[in-house]
Amino acid sequence: MSKCVATFPAKRPLPDGTTARTTLTLVKSFAGKIAVVTGGGTGMGRELVVQLAAAGAHVSMCDLSEERMQETATLARSAAPASDIRISTHICDVSDEAAMYVFRDEVLTAHDTDHINLLFNNAGLSGGGSVVTDSRESWDRCFDICFNGVRWGVLAFLPALMKSDEGHIVNTSSVNGFWASIGPDRPHTAYSAAKFAVKGFTEALITDMQVNAPHVLVSVVMPGHIGTSIVQNSMNFGARSLSAEEKELMTLADQMFQENAPMTAAAATTVILTDVLAERWRILVGDDAYALDSAVRADPENAYDGAISEILFRNLNDARDALEVATD
Image 1 (cartoon, helix red, strand yellow):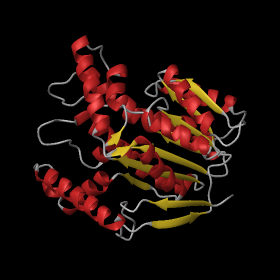
Image 2 (tube, one colour; image 1 turned 30 degrees about the vertical axis):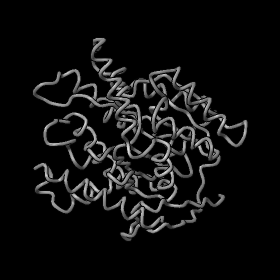
Image 3 (cartoon, one colour; image 1 turned 120 degrees about the horizontal axis):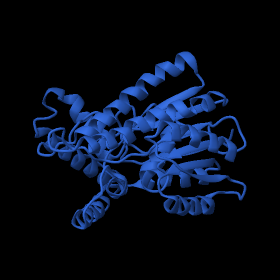
């Protein structure tokens, strides 16, 4: 395999605790690999498809919107280094176990193969904020996509991963997979519970694969606030239909969520793929993810008393100040 030279951004904390810019030479490559991405129509899913194709991988994606997948496919084919890079699109609801097996069979047919190398269980949405005030349907829809979508993805594609010379499962959790809150005054129960489940399931898979399929690696991704369309997707594919007024408010919220994000989906995806090549099992994405992880670890007993928000933003400001000094 050809060497891939990955340069970590200066502001990204490294394993030794430093933030200096470091170049890592990796004897790995995505070229010629077969990758599967769920939720490929928008956000980080779209960026995963495009950046994997640009690196020479053949990619199959699923989503609930054929139109958005076609937009992604056009971008991916434009980014691909050769015209023979295969990109396929598949309509699939990841919360439907049977549909995921159909998706698996379609992927293997599209690539005329019995194996895949990379599985990115990326699809997700928000919802089910409170067990007291939100509906059971909202809770179930969020949990079914955010956790069961990952579970069904692993179960459906694991035999194909095991048939490869080297495989890698990459499951997207969240900072809400280790801190079940978005602030002291707003419940985030279903999403946080699902993302905790993804993190636990993925960490358990590491040992499972080491024992039963040591050539299949496993990573869990925990992004912070990334500029994706998760709010819009939650509106379009949530548990219930929204009124015109609710849709207007959600559209505004989606715009604000993306505009205020400290990291773009493209930048986040570059971090993810760099760490996948580096075979890291625990992938934090964004300064806010690192700051929050440090704050929770430093004082877990007080993680939910409200003060942690102050710690989080202080750490973020310190990180940004350090970055400005390092890059002056």
